[in-house]
Length: 125
Image 1 (cartoon, rainbow, N blue to C red):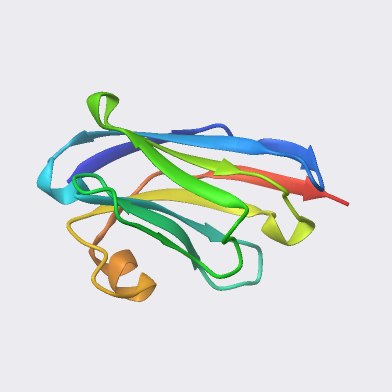
Image 2 (image 1 turned 90 degrees about the horizontal axis):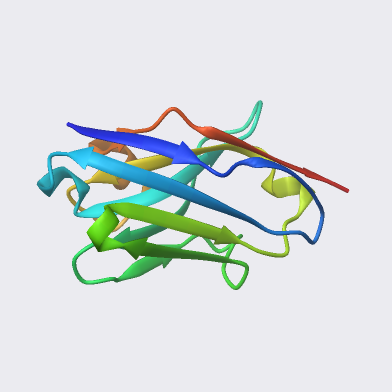
C-alpha cells in the first residue's frame, strides 16, 4: 500500500492557477503510475491526469488538455498538477492516486490505485 499526502488546493478566480502536490511513500511498485482524480458534489469521479513515474508517459482527460500539466520529482517521490486557466467547472475535491499501471482506462487505474485524502479546489466566476 502507498501512503499519499496532497497539498496545494484552495480558492481562485476563473482564469487563475493552482499547483497541487502529492508526496508518496511506501510500496514503490504500487506507485509506478500516479495521477489525479476529481469529484464534484453530485457528479461521478473523473480522471484528470496520470504519469508513469519511471518512463514519464502522461495521460490527460479531454476536459483539461492544454490547461493542466502533470509532472514529477522522482527523487522526492512527488507528483505535481499545475492547473492553469481554471474554470468554475474545475471546482471539485482532487484526489491523488497511485497504482501499478494506468491500464488503458481511467476506470482501471481507479480500481487498482491507492488514494489520498483529497484537497479542495474551488474556482469562482
